[in-house]
Image (cartoon, rainbow, N blue to C red; front, side):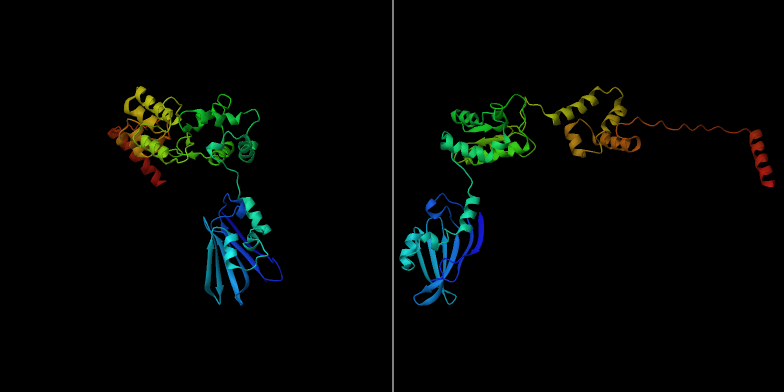
Length: 338
C-alpha cells in the first residue's frame, strides 16, 4: 500500500489546484502507471458553467469520476479506463487521461515505483532474466557466489509433489552442516514469497523446520499438513533429528533411575530443576510424584539446587548428678555476691 499527498498545478489556464490524495495498491497495469484499487485524486475546474470538484478514483476494473457542485454530488461517470470516462465527460480533451488522474505526477510515480517489488509465478521459474532480477533484489547480498541458488528452484520444479521442507531443501545447495541463519533465512523467505510460494507450516516456532508449497492455491496443502500434525502423524521435530529438549529430560530421567540412594538421592537430583519448571511439566516429563517435587523444592531452598545436604547438629542431653548441681548453684551464688 502507498500513500501520497501532493498539490500540483497542471496548467494555470484551466485549474488553480490539482490534488492527489492516495492510498492504493500496485497493479500490473502499465496503462495506469501500475496504480490500482484505492487510487484517488481530485481536480477543480468548471463543469457546465459551475466551479466543480472532480473526485477521481480507480477500482479493480473501472475508472470513476464524481463531480461535486456546491458540496453536493452532482454527476457520476464510470467506464473501463480513465480515457473512456473522460471521453464521457467531454471536456479537457487536450490533456491525457493519465495527466488528469494525476498518474503523471512525479511524486505519484515515485510512490508507485517504491511500492513496486519484483515478483513472479511458478511458471516463470525457468525464465532466467526474471529469476535473476528477483535474486538480485532479495537474496544476492546474503549468499555466496559459489552457492547454486537456481538449483533450489530447478530441483523443486522437477519433483513430483508441490511441498518441500526448507532445511532439507537447503542441503541440496549448501555445504554439509551449513546453517542458514536469521538474515539469510529472511532473505530466502522473501524470495520464496515473491516467486509464488507459500509457507504452510502447521506448527509454531518450537521447531526450526518449515514446510512450503509451490501450489497456486496453498489451501489444500496447508489443510493436509495441519490435519497430519493435529493427529500426531506429523512431528514438529523428526524422530531421526537431534532433539536437545528430549535429551535434557531423558538425561534427568536416567539420573533418577540410576540413583542408588533412594528418595534422598532423587530429591537432591530433582532439586536442580524443581524451582525452574512447573509441577505439571516435571510430572509430565519425569516419573516424579507431587510429594517428591515438593521435597526437592524444599531441599533446594535449604541446600541450594543439587547441593550437598547440610549435616544436622547433634544435641546430647545428660542429667546432672546432685553433687554437680550443688557446685553449679554455688558458683552462681558467688558470682551474684561479688
